[in-house]
Image (spheres, one colour):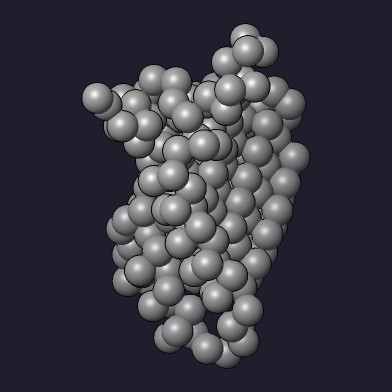
Amino acid sequence: MISEKEKCRQGELYDANYDTELITERQACKGLCHEYNHLHPSEAKRRKDIIVKLFGKTGNNFLIEQPFFCDYGYNIEIGENFYVNMNCVILDEARVSFGDNVFIAPNCGFYTAGHPFDVEQRNRGLEYARPITIGNNVWIGAHVCVLPGVTIGDNCVIGAGSVVNRDIPANSLAVGNPCRVIRKI
């Protein structure tokens, strides 16, 4: 029998709400996020140690401002020179990968989880997860929402308040709801 976690990894509908393995993993992650968010900002080494423990992969140079929230942590990969301002949420049911030199403004969300339109499936707690990939040298403005399955290419700027529901090609300035390329950079 295939586990709910394996179904998730395969991109199938899976039980996120009632599966004890996934609940346990989310609780452990939330505990680390709680600890991280309650550290004094001057405790840079301890903050870095928690993120290294929490994330699947980190570069050496990164700063994630508090508060920060994620669901599992181990599905998050960050490159070098990574900066996230306060109030970032990453629902990392699937892999969320950030390249080098990525700068994220306050109040941004990256959501790999989605729910079926079928009300009976949704009410049973089923969901799906699609990975998010952010390239190198990307700046994401304040209050940006990145939805499941999106790739943002290298050297992009995503304007504040955008809802990114489709891929954005490299070297683009993109803004809006839904987010659209307005010109090449």
